[in-house]
Length: 624
Image 1: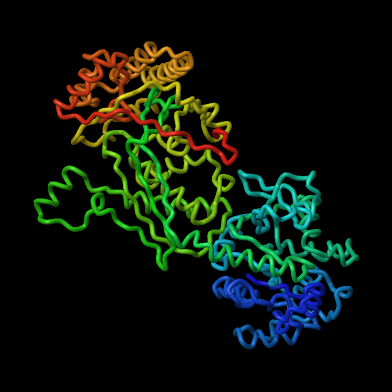
Image 2: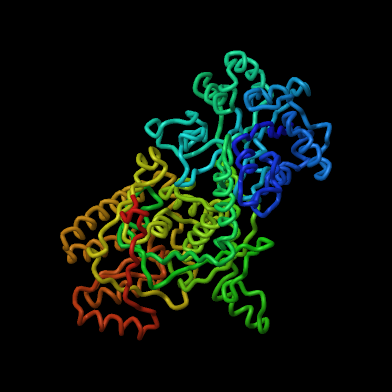
């Protein structure tokens, strides 16, 4: 592949304003071309581009195109940066009015060097924010696509779309559906700006002479005009890749622009956002109604609870480090007997594997979705107080918190990984990477928090790629209690062979899942009118149906005992999740105290449920 760096622009406005500046701060920069001005950190803007591009395994040649007026400056730069001077192309122009235009300069190199390879072309005089982006990701993504590649970024709020080429990108395919060169604010809602940072296949290069022939006016010989023609008029396949950074000093800019963006990007680099720890928290959940139908195109109501949580902390680090938890990932033991006792009780699988699997899946997702992550390392550590193996969604809580940390660290938002799709990402980490049998319910509530009604109907899932998730007013949820086994067995065994029976078309299992969904709708209606007696009956029905489908041998003696004990005191009781913990609704406050005492006497842990409020969007409204 060939790389071409364009620095042939005549920055007359900036150059003249530096010359006329009376402060004396910029006198040493008089006559210096824009690409060789100091960037963030004091190094030349072009130096940062050369650092990113100087990856020999990707480019067999790198060419730099400048003008006759500034040729000597770039020749001197090249000798000091181990850049081959013979690869500097002089376009012969000395004035702005005599310029060839950016596409004309590219055409000059293609003809002069007889290039018949795929190319990457960048404007080397653009100031960019994050100097650690990985150009390897850009090349690899381009290789996977059948068309061209255009880099874009999310504009800052202060930027005006009328000064940029704006792209509209298909969220499913990442194909650019429309390119608008400096559009008015009424033409598009997009704020995704394209810059001169493109990959072209060799077959596409033949379109450049055609474009130039059709556009003799140099004002039209810009990459914005070319890309608009290539995408909108010729319907050429061009894909978008997002860089989570910013680009500035594009086109004719003045000294005020240079000062503004240099300060802005410098502040971004030194704002300590990644140099101080960032902690994300995800909470345990209780399945109020409908589980386990979330894994079988059913419906559920789930509630996030503050009682138990998992938190993950991320901070920038010279190396990528995943820190073992002293309790959950032990590597030191007092004796062989201690190892045996801890392993028998806790098992072998701590949380470290969850961190690693999430990081792996996150990188894979970004690569597939056309998001180029910067080369920045971090340290991840976690903590949790969610009881293990009792069906309170402890594993998915660690994954959910890790995902939030990674999105924060790499400056991604809900447009990069839409909120309704985040639960599926978390589930994919557990199923694809760790072979954990699970459904979507836990992951939805740990993304949204609060109390959520979820509809996983097959037609809905196939149509939009996720379920319908609607908040329920938490004030409608009555006071609940939670009890769990102090020393549980592996809760994953609770699922047993129901999945296989479902896949095989077992009529009883399919009918049961439909009934679970119906119970969920009835429970939602009961909550809306405050009919807690009806809710109590529905909760009992939920468990009774589960018992029929799974059988007592799978349910387990301790789980059955918790259900029986609760019902002796007039309380409802059902599994919170997959087993090991039960939740209940007791309408008689006197009986509730007796119930708690009875549970404690038999060695179970019991507590009141503390609801966790929903996560709201920036405008304060609940997310859908």
